[in-house]
Image 1 (cartoon, one colour):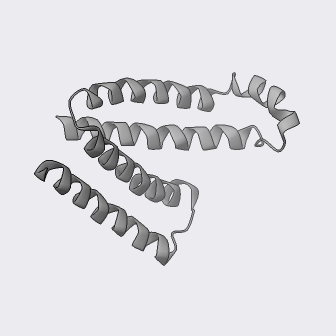
Image 2: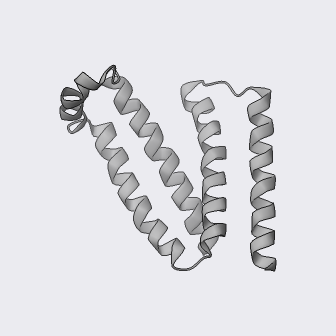
Image 3: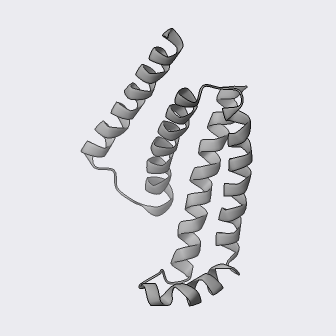
Length: 124
């Protein structure tokens, strides 16, 4: 059950970030600090940005359930690693962003690191 919630948090966060990127791109991006007030006005009515915010809120509620049931070190390691891995793959798939070989090595190291953290936390 807890692993399912952790994966749900990671998926929720990835989808939220994809929606945010789409919404910000549709608004033309944020080019300077002086443009922040106007940008925030437009963002408040963007369906993609509003969906992103709703997903973040729901993810935070799920996260509260996770941290009441799991050790924080394990939860953060698993959720964070899942997010980084899924985000890199989603950005590649949906936005055509390339993954350099060094990034693939980094993803592998993240996976190894989470395994190590999880083993260390459960053994202690």
